Length: 155
Image (tube, rainbow, N blue to C red; front, side, top):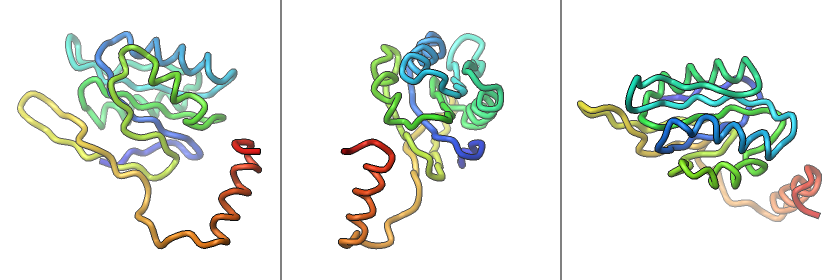
């Protein structure tokens, strides 16, 4: 299943174990990056089995909800965000007590491999981006190092 994010967004896809996830991920996001724009869609897998939604941006909330419903895998969550990278929030999300697994944190095209049984659906894995076209050469190393310094991740 292809994830269909809004333009210019980063994606985090994960799994948790409790309805409290939505509020705790919200807190992790806003405490990590001031003024971050994001939406969370969380697939509740017991009780009413609804997609629970939160965030700071209506477009991203709506898109996260639609993609989570299409995904339909128990206790999975998807976050779409702008104005930050996964590296800015990932450790905070991993520290949320309910979070069990992170499948992807990317801006690449993302496909989710799903299994379905009589009970429900589950995520088997992800396809994150495209396959390699070769091995970096000296020019590639130079470009990578310059990029990381330009965007402030290395000095």
